[in-house]
Image (cartoon, rainbow, N blue to C red; front, side):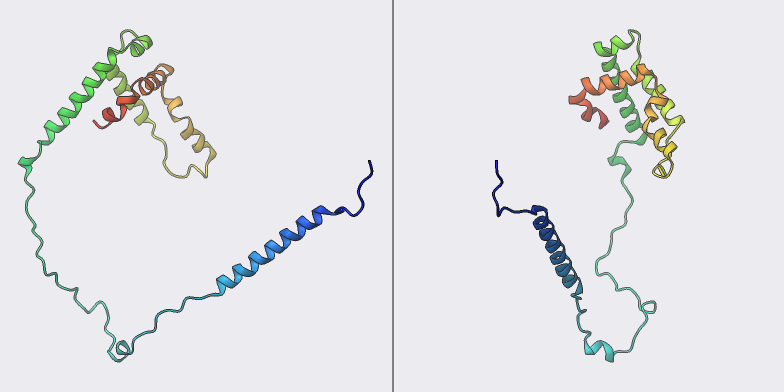
Length: 177
């Protein structure tokens, strides 16, 4: 097996030459493009002949349209107490629906998901994460990553996961409550 004479002896030299030429062309065209400066539009001669007025002395232009400022009609909406009561009843209905599901009964046969929901909210809100500075402190970053695991029991985590998996189709509508 003889090698053919006259073959390319240094293929890496050709590759290096192509790379160097590419870098030189990129640098040349990049500096030429950066050298172009956009000229501001010429200032009109009429503005130079006018005396300069300060902006604080001039009054804002008057609006031609009058803005109607009226009282909000409170009778057109639900009274605030009724709306809150309706949302609370919808939440209770959703949790009663969850109480009947077999995947919830498998976790605990005597479960009341509304009480668990209140307990989970209380535990999570008692130890809130700090929303700033987590990229500066690795301990804060670790606390944020494991926030749910530190504050919730295994049964509570399983309940949340099972509800999210099994109620995937209706979860968005239920979260709109």
